[in-house]
Image: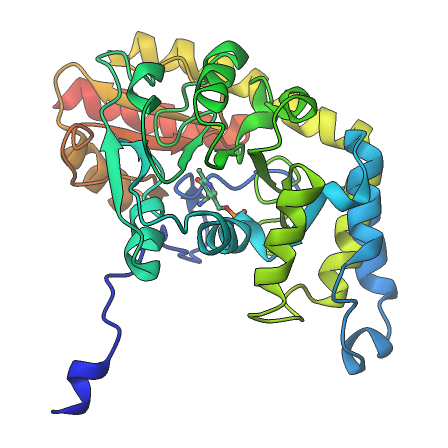
Amino acid sequence: MTWEKNVRRVVPYVAGEQPNKTGMVKLNTNECPYPPAPGVKAILQELDREALRLYPDTDAVGLVEALADHYGLEPEQIFVGVGSDDVLAMSYLTFFHSGRPILFPDVTYSFYDVWAKLFGIPYKTCALDENWHIRPKDYVGSNGGVIFPNPNAPTGLAESLDTVEQIVGANRDVVVIVDEAYVDFGAESALPLLKKYDNLLVVQTFSKSRAMAGVRIGFAMGSKKLIRFLKDVKFSFNSYTMNYPAQKLGVEAVKDDAYFRSITQKVMDTRTRAKEEFRRLGFSFPDSMANFLFVTHERIPAAELFTALRKENIYVRHWDKPRIDNYLRITIGTDEEMDKLFTFLKKYLESN
Ligand code: PMP
């Protein structure tokens, strides 16, 4: 077909599967195992017809103000989008425009190279060290920008604020994006650095620690100048991305800090217990600060365990990729869900 040669061809990102089976234990996409804040459900029931008939506020002012208030920033320092994937994609389009390669770790969120290819942005990956840590010296020198998650995914390892600052400080002529999708489970946020660095963009999400993956809310925080550039690109693309119900529900979630703290603490407590259990069963893993563990077994290959778990209706994530193909990424579920996982693993490991 002649028209086919004029098509933009891409290899898309593959998200974790979303099965819907009764009795399944779903530990494959890092969702929160607890419901959103009670106020979120109350607002959902109150939403009237007007929430659907009218266009939503393009600037999502209510949500932006709630976030500004919560994080001690000016509203002009906040940009919201449809999940952090949307915010990150807009950030690539806005900030990675130099023609020089952008840098990110070799083992990291597998959307990073997909966006680079989609937007025609050259990129280079920097190998994590043998303990899965970022080597800040790899990020020194000419580049078109830097992006990394902290904590990293799928390893769960967090870098110190000092490491993050070294990277931001060494790259003052480009934008450095710190993807903090998993920061609320015990890692240190780069937010305090915003006072010092106008080239830093910190991106977070409601999908994990606020239990709202289905509502799709992500946000970026940075200098007013960065946010203005980001908005200019977003408003050149689609004005009405975030729907009105999402904006209203997001405000309720931000308001209930006590609930937010209670569910993130529960996940962290279960993570501590899960680490002990995994160790006892012969697994090793980086010391995760995220709501998942990245585990490898001393004897049984990860691909085999993945298949055995799946047959049991227990969903985890496995990538057939260099360096990580003998690991499973397992989301921290409720204590009951983790018990089901450990009961099965114990039985399986005893008989295999
Ligand atoms: N960044 C990282 C590192 C992630 O793992 C995810 C979840 N897939 C995201 C961003 C995007 O999450 P969301 O679009 O739900 O905010």
